Image (cartoon, rainbow, N blue to C red):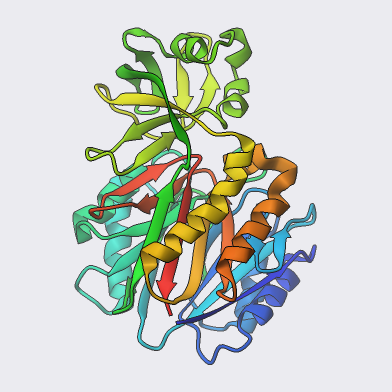
Length: 387
């Protein structure tokens, strides 16, 4: 595998797409796929047209990213827009890309996307691994649909984001742009992929059992008590100070976590909004009877976790890497704020000469062990591909 990365902050979206694509294709004799992450402020159809001018016939896949991207050039952002592209070339790899807009059931959309991706690849068997992107709200259901078709197959990816948490996020492939649905890329290859999926938070002694959930993502009660009150008590804070959007910012350094059955992975659950009825909107699905643990990390730890996680990924991959695809939560990026350049430097140092791209998402997907695919928030999903 070989890869190359290009970016642009040109205010003209078509020129930006062309400029980034021209850089990304340098040195690659053929391209299997282009990962594309861009600003929600762009005319994305025009941007894709610009990419097609430089990469005619090349499948692309991606979504809008929160405030910027990171490449070997550093943190890339602009009020006029931004786009980053990582082009991948491997003559021994077959990739099938599919996009399905949701018309009713997300599980059915996931099934349809899986079948279409296999058809695009000319295969009738499950891939070795796959990539997925979706909008916020029903990520787990898309995964369920895909799994119904192909079974347990390791995956990676993230949830589309915008710059203001107003629902302006988009998904896209070379076939077009849409807001609600799912995009997937199925990979058929004999080479290794490894994913390091972590929140890199520390457990506290504050924990309890979920006793009431509304509509999958509204945490109503913990241990029979109002969830927001319980969380405020754990933090030694006033409930009033955590109402509305205040909860989202306050919980970046102290979210909730749920453990898998073996304790190999603690998937982070980001409290998003504190409601007047003392419930909390959460960024992922929840289940009654599940234990939640309050997690903690300082901003220093959030920054340092990026380099540490990439180092762990390299060890887990165990062979020379041809490229890194790095998904970093947009909420963590907001908490890190002006120190984002430190994150870029840490990643560049660990990546060395290996091409990489970082997107900032509103949900992260990965697999830590036993092919248990999981969706989370405030997490890092770092993926490496054998050269």
